[in-house]
Length: 168
Image 1 (cartoon, rainbow, N blue to C red):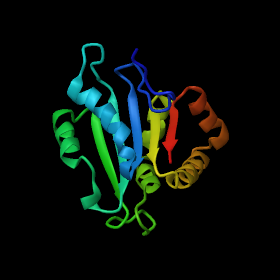
Image 2: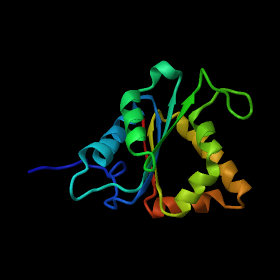
Image 3: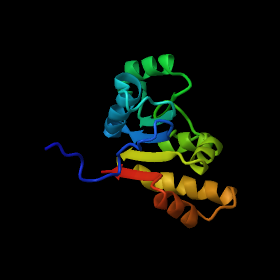
């Protein structure tokens, strides 16, 4: 008998039109590779992906990018369905002149990210647990800017299973 993961945090929705916002640090990219391979390489008859997969990847510098050739090939083949944005902490600066961390890169696209989430996107986080306090603080600040109550907003995402966190 074939069985799957015991948890459901990183499982993919069955809807091939779904929008995925995938946030990773370092080796946290691994589960997303399985996702994009299903979306763009395997393309089984029962899952012809037509949504959007947007990867935010945080690493120290360019030579630490994982699967870069594979990601570039997907972007070239599926430009309307795949995006990648890197946060390179030792090479880039954030808007305040400090190091570019993953939360800073997501914040650069805050309006797009919030619009996608408002329209049912799934937001995944995988990697070092140390990224979550910065992510949560950034989201709390963006909610405040937008006149949203952070606790209600995040609870709504969790209730609709749009907020998926697997950190270590």
